[in-house]
Length: 249
Image (tube, rainbow, N blue to C red; front, side):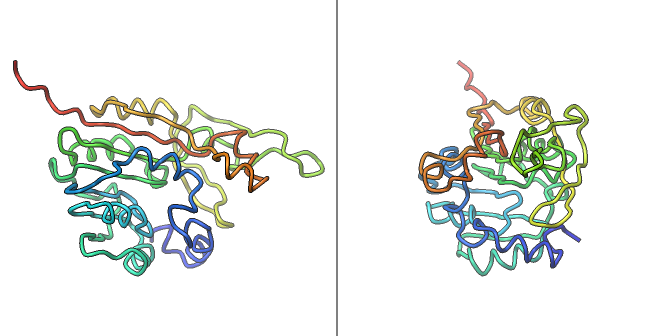
């Protein structure tokens, strides 16, 4: 059973602001949106780990010709079809590891907060590279290795509960890490920065942009607790391109 099909987990996840309000409630959206084309007219788009389908709807509303959202969770796809249905969106229940990647079928591949659940990151990278047309873009948001290598993904605190620092341990030992997320025990996959970025290069991609999620000025001004998010990165944002072969001179 997919993690997000667990009733307790799914109910807790549904209470998150990004689950209720979509992209504008995602703290990293102000950065990640810059990695996506403003005009997607005529593009074919694949969303890997589409969840509620917010990014699928975003692409369709900006003119994408066809959008495919894949996700292993039946519950997530049920919500996607309720909240983000569109005549040019198709939803398919399938894990990234099991998807049969077509050859040069998409102009844009998006993956938002899904690939830190994938053990074989290189295999998925190879599939995405295959599925992109020459000149196509892969925009990815994955949990930052500083975050996934955190001990229980939580702060070290003093006797009064005040944050002291963010602990990191076992950084160079990739693999499964059990932690708490929305009050439930979950298993994620820790990948080093070298694996995440170097793996893209090994797959054939050219890196076009790299950023780390942080609150914008408005969030820092309006939500005091957001200051803690300036102390360590939680997400790594990457834009990679499948360079079109040059024409013979």
